[in-house]
Amino acid sequence: MGAHNVGYQPNEVELAYVRKAYENSSAFITVCGGIQAALDAGVLKGKSATCPRFLLPYARKTAPDTKWEEKRWQRDGKLWTSGALLNGLDLIRAFGKEMWGGEGSLVNYWLEMGHFPERDVNYGDAPSKV
Image (cartoon, rainbow, N blue to C red; front, side, top):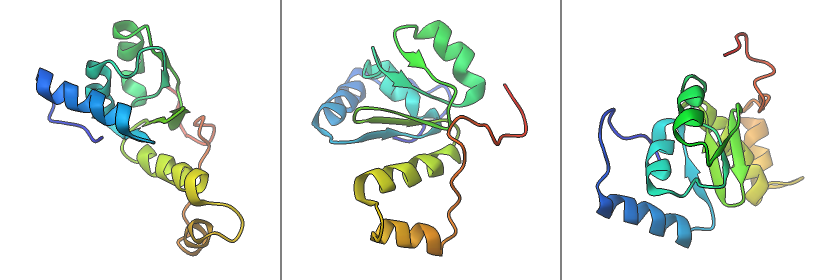
């Protein structure tokens, strides 16, 4: 799930679709602001998740039933969430390796051929702290 326009409020039909998509998926991925629709639909209750770093204080205050992690990406079962947009690339790298990777796999080949970087999931390599 990607983000919707700022200020847009999904209606109940859209939220029901998000809940159904989550229930029927083997992996449910949100990137950046895409976390909002999943949050509004209630699929994050009792889960660990992340969102853009600048939104973490707001998320922790408004959704205390979700364990908010300060990470580039977070996995809780089939739920995969990322921080900001570019952190979605880190998430997809981890997802690809988890689902189809391994020594000698096509995923690993393309990650190496494309020099796709592996950054610290905990922002240890980030120049600034939030």
